[in-house]
Image 1 (tube, rainbow, N blue to C red):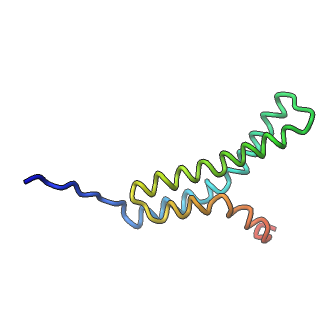
Image 2: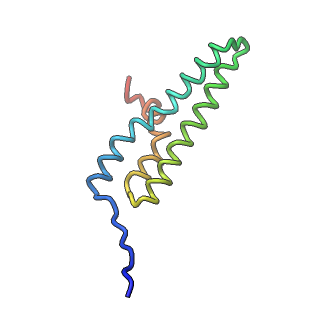
Image 3: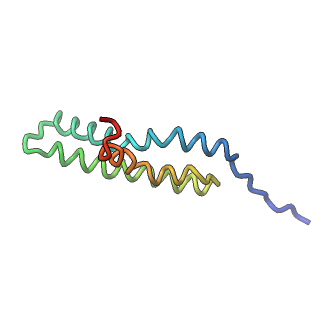
Length: 103
C-alpha cells in the first residue's frame, strides 16, 4: 500500500504577517514604477511628454502584473490572506489618497 502525499498549508499567523507586510509594498509599487519609468524616459531625452506616458505604462504593467503574480503563486502555495492582500494592493493607495487620509 502506498502512502498518499499530504499537503501542509502555511500557518494562519504566517499568512497574516506576510499579508500585512506585503500590502504596503505592493500598494506603493505603481507609484514607484511611475516615478522610475518617467525618470528613465526623461533621462533618455523625451521632449514630447512621452515620459509621462512611459511612466503610466510602467505603473500599469508593474503595478498590476506583480500583485496578480503574487496572488496566483501564493494561492497555489496554500495561503488564504496573502492573495486577497495582493489583489487589493494596487487600489489601496489611490483610494487612501482620494479619501484624504494623508492630508
